[in-house]
Length: 412
View (cartoon, rainbow, N blue to C red):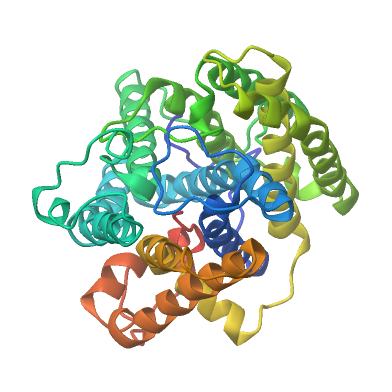
C-alpha cells in the first residue's frame, strides 16, 4: 500500500457524498449482531470458549440463524472498514490517517474498556448470582472459579475495535515504508486480478482464512477471550480488511452486475446449508486443529461469498435512500454495538426463570438490546460528548458526509 496520487491514465473520481446502500447495510448488520448475541443461550451446542450469562433449551431455528449470522458478519464489517480506511488514507495522508483512526477507533475502545466492560462484567455476574451459580460475595471479590471464570476476562465484544486499530496501524506503517523507498506514486485503480471484488482475490482470501480457521476454529466457531490480538484471529480477518482496501482503489466492482453479487449470495447460502451438519459434528466433539478440514474451508468460503455479496450489492446496486427510522438506526449503530451487549446478557439472565419458549426469549432479548440501546442513545449520547466521540461530531453540527467517509463504516 502506497501513497495514491493522480495519474493521467487513472483520474481520481469524484467522491460520492453518500452511499445509500451502505446505510441500509449498516443498519441491517447492526440488527444481525444483536440477534446473534441474543440467540447464544439457545444454540444446540454451547459456543466453545465463550462464557455467557445463561444456557437454556436449544432452538433449531435460532441455532441456524445465529450460526448463519456468525459465518459472515465480522468479515463483512472488516471488509467495509478496509474500504473506508483506504479512502481516509487517500484523503488525509499517512499521518492524518493514523491520527484519525486513533481518535475514532482508539477513543471508543478506551471508552468501552472504562465504561462498557464493567457493565458487561456485572451483567454476567448478576445473572449467575440469580441462577445460583456463584454467591453474591463474588460480586466484590471477582474471584470466579472454573469453569465460569476460565473465559471471563478480556475485551469481550470490543475485540473488533482492537483488531481494526491494529490493521490501521499496519496500513500506516506500510505507507510510511513505501514512502521511504520512494515508491510514492501508484495509479488510483488496481489491476483487475488484484481487485478486492475479483474472484481470484477472493479465492486467495478463502485459502488464508480457511487455513487460520483449521488451525484455531474458535476464531469464529467459538470465541477466544483475550486482552491482546491473537495470531490466528489476525490471519483470518486481515484478508477481509485488505480486500476492502483493494476494493476501494478499483473500478472493476462497479461494473459487476446485480446477478454477479446475487450469485455470491446464493452460493454462500448453499455452502452454509452444506456445512451446517459438519459444524454440528465439530461442536459435539470439538478438535483443535479441526478434524475435518472440509469444515473450515467451507466456512471461510461461505463467509466470503456472503460478505462480498452483501457488500457489493449494497455498494453498487442499492440507490434508494433509507427511511428516517433506518437512517437513525444506522446513525446509532456504533452506540448499539457498544451498549447492547450488557443489556442482552442481563435480560437473558432474568429470562432463565420465565416459563416461555426459547424462540420468544430470543425475541425479547433482541428487542431489549435494540430498544434500550436506542433509548440511551437518544437520551444521553446523541448530542453529548459521547456522541461526538463515536460519530466524529455532535448531532446538529453541520458537516458534509463526504468529509468523513468513516461515518459509513460501522464497528461491531
